Length: 116
Length: 115
Image (cartoon, rainbow over all chains, first blue to last red; front, side):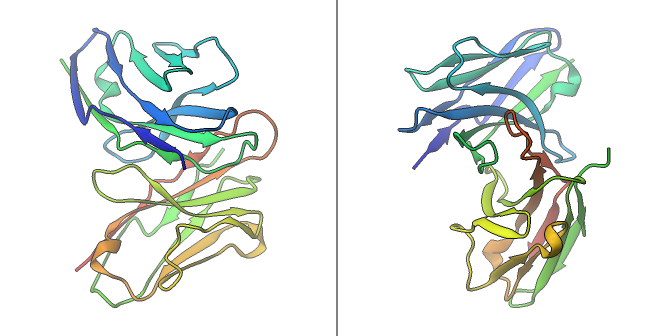
């Protein structure tokens, strides 16, 4: 069975600074996908960034980037130039491949507070 | 494009009562998911539909939970009878099966409180 662990329940960062959220996972699969989802206080979950396990290049989306270490089973999220709107709970999630419509297995979440 | 719609947004019931939640996915999305999110935890899949067929219901407490997706569009999740531990947010998500990496789009959720 796959598991996802987020070891930082809460984090805070000053506006405009950089923060890194940690995620580790456990799987025996070789084909899978990894995601970071953001859940603002209004609770609608939205996708931040995704990574295919077979790709060595780390995914980036504007101010968001990941550090994917497949051998270490680590998938951290870096938020650069933090903004007040980044305040939310962030979930790391795993999806088994090769199907692209599988279920998501979520970590426990990290609450991020961006301070002005 | 309209997002995933859910209703009601909030529901308070007494234990042993029954409750139903409704979800309308994004138009054209064949896959629909119901997740349960207990306070302070990540969502956990309850059931996944592909069109109107069940793909995965391994974590659905079938003695009290049921779900259906008639005509492969909207879906209903029911709890009967409810227990205190069912207090949670119930999230519906949908995705398209058309190529690429699946992105699941989530609805706003239904917050259930069981007293």
